[in-house]
Length: 456
Image (tube, rainbow, N blue to C red; front, side):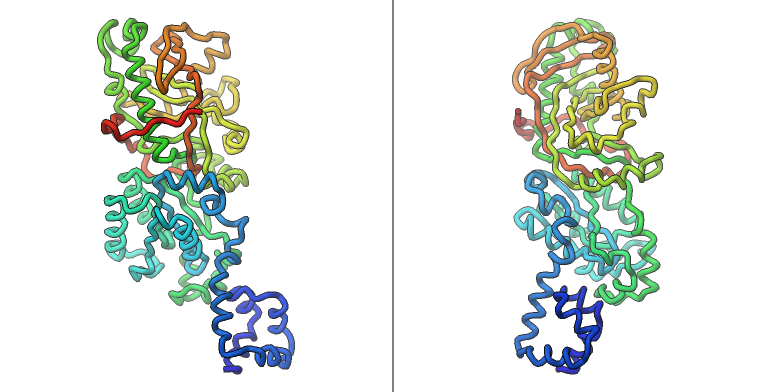
């Protein structure tokens, strides 16, 4: 027994990382065998319990407080996640600390969380097979979890190094209206193949790890970064949108100005059908990346403010609702903290010749007309901003009541703006959209499904 322990103590790396032993013991790996022997003589038959305690506390040592994602340590984020539908994809090399982090999250959200692991299904983290059949049972488990709504927070523990595999998971998340958060462990050895060779339980060779590493070294960039609404808040905002469109459509002043919408004046126009397209998950886009193809996307993702914001909960403040012949949307007033992750050129991207306030393009697309892309909503909002900058406040043409109480202004060309009497606040998670562009769901919801909004 003493001999075997002596061999273990002979490695500085083993002492420092596997058990997180204090520095007073680490020195014995460099000191004389006599000192090591004196330490060994102090161990009792219960030594294994001491080691077990060291191992069980390793999670906090491997993932110190400053390295943990916000959904573990930030109270506002935790509360927002509990009311959201999120698929967390653990990503990284074998032995990098994914499972430890996944279990920490599972423990934090034990009442509403489900952890699904590739290891349980004996899926070895190597180059994916051509058929992908090794994931059949895992995908069945994941689909069942989604379909039966077994959890609103689902954690998938795997290396996630294969793009084709990720695309399939993104499609599944979209189908069940789950936003996606990709988390990677922040352990110092996460890309050190020499250390990972001894840490991974699959006993992968150094060569196998090196083959996997290139696919996991770079950040996986989304189609766009943005604030994705918590499910409960999304439902109530959809209901608010319906109420806005119904009241606007019944306004006498609106019925007299229908030509911009392709109708004769005084006709009845069902705006819910007119704006029949809506984003799969309501969100406020911050930065369009096109999976890294857009110039400056990688630099944006590497900003310290963006890294700290990822997976963090934020409250968005909606000050106005608007409708044009193309889109219906909500104007978002960004706070100072939110402006830190708002690209300085976001307004210039669509209106390069105009000088517009930073953050004035921030919006939530609530619906679009047929064949109109979501990006048009932000352009329409900036048209309102430009008119207001020129001194035009619009023609005051009535008031709406209820959760959409406020004054309605008309700006010609079918442009209607409702300045809310009280701002609406919605909770959100800052993350990325990784799926295919253009995924839509019907704007109409089931009667009684959507809850009342929370008003400031």
